[in-house]
Length: 351
Image 1 (cartoon, helix red, strand yellow):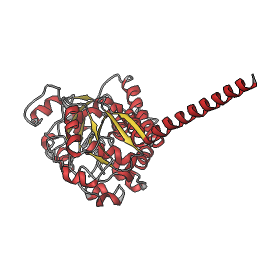
Image 2 (cartoon, one colour):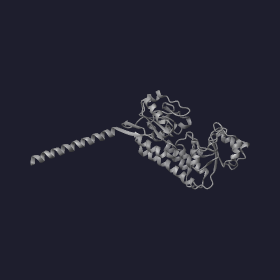
Image 3 (tube, one colour):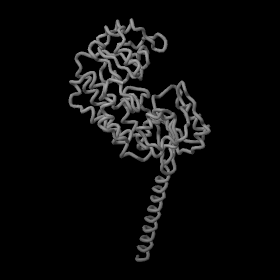
Image 4 (cartoon, one colour):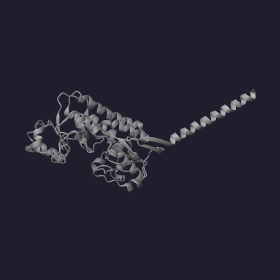
């Protein structure tokens, strides 16, 4: 009987050791390889931690810079001297890859491969055929290409998904929470608007290249509850409108991003009869290092929510300390500490 018990005990110990060993083997495999499902449902497996990242466009470049700037191995677009004032000086030394999508697509695949990133990240709206396009690019360069869906109101989700990919969930959550708070504020305030403010927005030096309703360049205007005077179906070639048409629309507020346009609209007699001009409601959009409204339509728009909300509906944003929010945003997203003078210069309506 003792012999039988001994045999049983030995078998139990052996089974226990085998099970423990098998469990440890699975765990080790899990730590070595990680599966990531991108926003298109495409699966990627990464061995070890991601240390080297390449962006495929301006949106992915900006969101990656705010999250993991030290892991960037190159840029999709050059940084101007003005942009570099607010960013890590190391960015100026990174190679240029170009962009994969858009009218100015100019991706240098050889330069991209030479930089040897662990992953290429594309971010933005889901376009027709994008999965096939990225699969083909991935095959050509032999590097995983991951897509993260990112638009204004899902900015927080995009940060969290990226954070899980690059292994920096803690910082991603900080950026996500800040973004979502601004978006929630806009939703709350918009639901309280009784008399929408009509808005005309132009990005051109002559003030005549108007941005219509529904265009992603005007998303911040619509999010905060501004009433874009240019209808969605407006079409006259490159969104060019006439001053006569603007006089008919007669917007409450005019938003301009070009300093020449601001000078023109506020001093030229032909614009003087507009209510926005007569009531001193023509605003030069803050645009260093990037416009608060668009160009690019990326994370820079988060602070634009607070700025434009305060411009259009000051009563609904009365609890927002705009100067403090600007300081916080630049610190969190650009890693730059603004001086009091810089804050005031950003927020002034004059060039």
